[in-house]
Image (cartoon, rainbow, N blue to C red; front, side):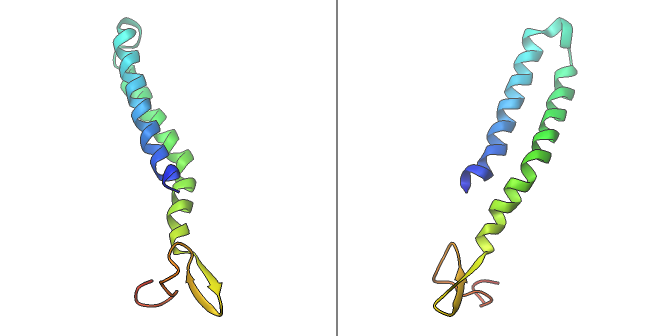
Length: 86
């Protein structure tokens, strides 16, 4: 689950490094376009990873039934809809 949450950050850092290097290497051709391309790429990544991140985050609130008690999937000691859960 942590992989889904960390993947956008890691890819964002890779994208920033990539476009910075492209700006340095292709200075004559790109100039300041790398900033615009970097921002566009980051926005696309955020758009693509948003469903994965929100799904992974809300899985922590999922309840399952064990022996007639509803408990959190990630922590069986917490009953659903109790003060600890809310």
